[in-house]
Every structure is written in structure tokens, then in C-alpha cells.
Image 1 (cartoon, rainbow, N blue to C red):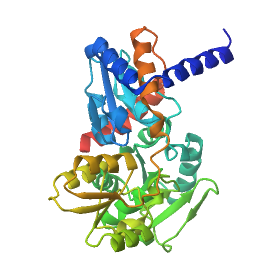
Image 2: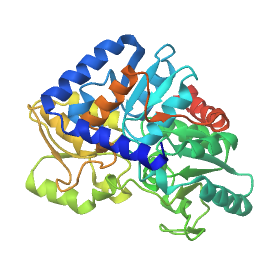
Image 3: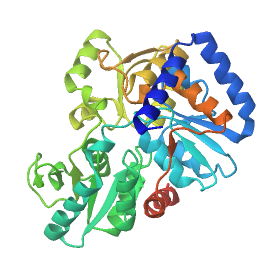
Length: 367
């Protein structure tokens, strides 16, 4: 059979699953999970849609799921309901005996795609020529396996929004400067929280292959990659002013992937896990405007009816790539496992895995 015909048949089979009723999807997913028993673990990121996250055996943010993946020694199949880089990280942290599945291969991440390995190699040559052997590379886990491997090979480590300050402290003990990939906003907000002035941060533009000084030129301690999260960029300073005018007394809680100006206006900011814990421990009657992915905000509002919880920008759509993981794709993946023909298997090559694992392990060691 030709590759074209294989793809057409694959698409046809997925489309057939999309025609199933909601009840049948739920029944067959539950049945497949039951038959696979302890051979299967489903991991779900907090940003995942509700009708899928209900089937996750473990849910969490990037750091939590990385830790869970690292200890799943005996599980044969790990189905990751998230995006591509998360499934890659899971494959890196698990053994060759285990199989990692991403239900829809189109579930990517625009932020991770903003830094490819060739561009990072060019950046490294540029900044080391300019600043010498004074730089340690640090990459957000929202990056490809190739970027994680580059960082590991050059003495650096990964980072999540949960452990950002700890990693920055470690990195700046090792070297004078950090090259931070790929989200400039998390890097800038963490740097400010760490006490680094804005004029000691610059931005590397991979398209122009040049350094920009948006906050005034100084001796840079952080070199930020010019990347961003397309969802969190939609939370602007004007939204903070608007929501406070609409809901007097409301508190604004945002993710550090939001732009610096928005974070500075917020009452609190922190990782996905921080946002969840902050809401859970808040007293009844508390009012929150939350600047992060809509699926999580809506879930928190449903789980805490004793509080008023709204999105900081109610016109923002959920993460479109994360939402590609739906019940038809999940069921299709599980029933292919039952048939003994795993589909959408995520495999990171051994050389990339070796160095990416080094970068991740360095992070886990200090977190």
C-alpha cells in the first residue's frame, strides 16, 4: 500500500471515530482502559479539555508530569494527553521497553516551534563570540527534544515555571550569563523576580540574528530568545484595568508566560500549579481574574462555585493545539493498543535522548 493510501485510510478511520456519540465514546474509552489495566497510564496536562482530562490517571503541570514519567518504570503504554514536546519529554524519561503515544500528532506548541536546533546553533555561535565563555543555556521544558539536547550538551539544564527561580539561582552560580529559550516573557519575569534589572536583559532575534535592548542597553546577565506563548500573549495590561473596573475588589492572578507589563499589574503570578493551589486555599467569596489557558480557568470556576472566577480576557480561545486531543483521538489510540498496533508512537533518537536527559536530570536534581 502506498504512503498516500495509508494516510487516507488513517484519516478515514479517525473520521469514523468522530461520528460516534458522546455516550459511545465514553463507554468505549472506559472499556479500553479496563482491558488494558496496569499496562496503561494516561497522563493529562492541566490545560487539557474536560472531556479528556477525566480519563487521566495523573494530571499536572510540566514539572509534575516530568516527575511522574520518570518513575513509571513498569508501565507498557503511556498515552500523553497534551502536546508534542510533552510526549517527547516522557519518552526521554522512560525506558526503551515503554511506548509513549500522542493521540494526535498535530498537537504541537507554537512556542516550542519558535526555536529550532539550527537557529539555536547560530545563536550560540553569535553570543559566545560576543560574550565568550560566560553563558549557560537554559531552556523551558516547552521546547523540542533537540533544543533540550543542545542545552544538555553545552552544560545547561531545563526549567519549568514551577522551579524557575531555583534554576536561575543555580545557573547564575555556574556562569555570569543565561541564554534563556524559547519564551522571553517567562525569562524576563523570572529575572525581575530574581532581582535582575531590565537593562541587564537583552533579546536575541533569531530571524535577524541580532541582539535587541528593549529596556535600555546594559551589560546583559540574561539573553532572552525572542519567543512567546500565543495564548498568554493575549492577556494585556488593558485587560487588568478593565476587569478591575467591572469587578471591584477582584484579584488578578496570571501565569509568568504573560508579558512583563501584565505581570507587574497583577496581584499574584506563578506557575499553573501555583494558580491552582492559590485558588484552592482562597476563602469563599474571593474574586479572581486568571490569566492562563481557558480550559483550566473554566475548570477552576466549576470546582469552586463559592468563588467568582473569570478569565482575565474572556475573548481568548483555548490553546488550539492542546485541544486537538479529543475523545475520538484518545479512543482511536486506545483501541489500536488493544489491537496490538500502536499508532502515533513518539520516539526520540538515542543521541538526542542522552543529552536531553542530562538537561532534564540536572533540573530534577535541584528541584
